[in-house]
Length: 306
Ligand SMILES: Cc1cc2nc3c(=O)[nH]c(=O)nc-3n(C[C@H](O)[C@H](O)[C@H](O)COP(=O)(O)OP(=O)(O)OC[C@H]3O[C@@H](n4cnc5c(N)ncnc54)[C@H](O)[C@@H]3O)c2cc1C
Image (cartoon, rainbow, N blue to C red; front, side, top):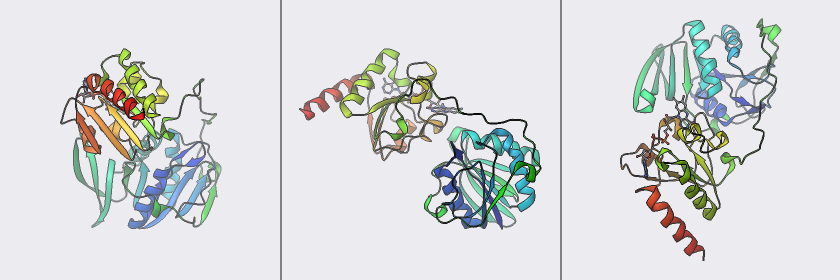
């Protein structure tokens, strides 16, 4: 069977999730990866169709439609990212194809597929049977990326004219924050605050802890939406993904949209609710009030450092 993967490209670079999708797709059949833009495709372990149309934008579902008509794939895989989910949804709706979102596994069955998918905001895991051809929007980290990396196969370069797609919209450029803040995705130690921190004034405590640990402060979306920290510090689906050595979660419940951005090697959580979902992804958890524990922690670390 033919499987089409839609590559995740940001600032002309193929993102890791693309390789995760290609690796899984190769278990299902012959893979072609559709890359929009001019990114270097040499590490993609599949055939590639590359369309020169700037950075991926929502209207690019029209490109996916044309490539779908050309290849007639049985499965089309997208990453569960802010860009790709828009494209996947419009593509599936236009062609009236079955679509599973927040997918964590896919297997071929009879004349279709079974997809394991998170529903109700990630609280419930279900198996869904989909008829072929079907669209899958796959969560980051569901499959290893290694299988999707290697030497690229046949690369076919196509223009929008050749595909018969008219755009009407041109990608001009990203608007970057005026002041370049720290990049939390590249930091080894991140002290992250959630609504449980209670008040803007208490962010200072987290900053002090980050300072003694040699890290930086980040936050969950409600903290950013309240204006307590800049947008560049948001962890999660609509923020950044942290990949360092330590992620200290202070008063964060662990909603699916938040933990999607937590890929640090060690997660330590402090929460007053022993049933908080954040403990499920934590190497170490403390059931305590952050406002009581953090000052003690700062003192003890200072003592230990001498
Ligand atoms: C499309 C979409 C995208 C989203 N993107 C993101 C995203 O990128 N990032 C993100 O974070 N969220 C995102 N969200 C929101 C997400 O669903 C959650 O609402 C959010 O993560 C909750 O933040 P929180 O854990 O800080 O707050 P809450 O869920 O309110 O949790 C607060 C926690 O603090 C604990 N607590 C309270 N007081 C104390 C105390 N004194 N000491 C210790 N613990 C205490 C509570 O027990 C609770 O567990 C998104 C939602 C949607 C729909």
